[in-house]
View (cartoon, rainbow, N blue to C red):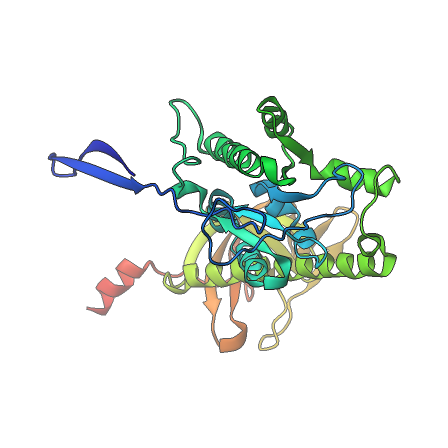
Length: 352
């Protein structure tokens, strides 16, 4: 089955261009379950005896998480005890666009045959594909697509003794799913129920040593993510100033230290430190007042929020540890301040 959408687009030159987008729908995309006799699948992924111990879902069932559950509970989905999970194409695409690290971990789960996780291509199935309605946001359309696919699975496996449980962190999505006759579960409520003893689960999931290892892993990943974020900011800041030479910019003093001032450059949202002690030069006379706080350099006092002018440059003397350097231009202090740099355009003109 072929669905097409046609629209016109105005080009930059003022012409009109007709665009046709084709979307192919099929009826031979299988459910992936061993209990199904209708689908002519060569190999099944989802097990026949799918049973996860729980008072909330005492019947055999498959889990179908939405995008938010995958993004926020990926560590639980990676647990070896969590099996027979259906990942929709809609969810896979959303995760790919929103978080590359979690997408990679999800792909690793899909490749683990012992997990029995099946990818259902709902966006190309004739009975589960839906179009975005007028005035409907992309997120609401994807939530509706997830509910439609869950409903299809529930009807498809209705006579096989298996149910499909939609896992979601969104109360609105849960309520709409229940209105459609689906069995939905907010995973946060399930975890809280287990914590207070109102529900049961596999003993390994509540083992304190295993939970400690899981928390340590979460903390480690969080710390590494922070390091990566800081390194990324530093790297791209260096790339930005590398091609701009030495700049003269106005800024404001944020903090005063014993031998330096920390300056904010509003134009770039950049913070940097101007040091007044240099190994290659004699140190100026510094008086630090901790109570004010203020720093007096050769008779000139620096206070918080004072306006200053500095030069910004990239120090590439050490290739492996490049740094952004700031030097004081104004106020002019003999032996401390540096001369302002010439603009690149003016410098190039003088060189000619």
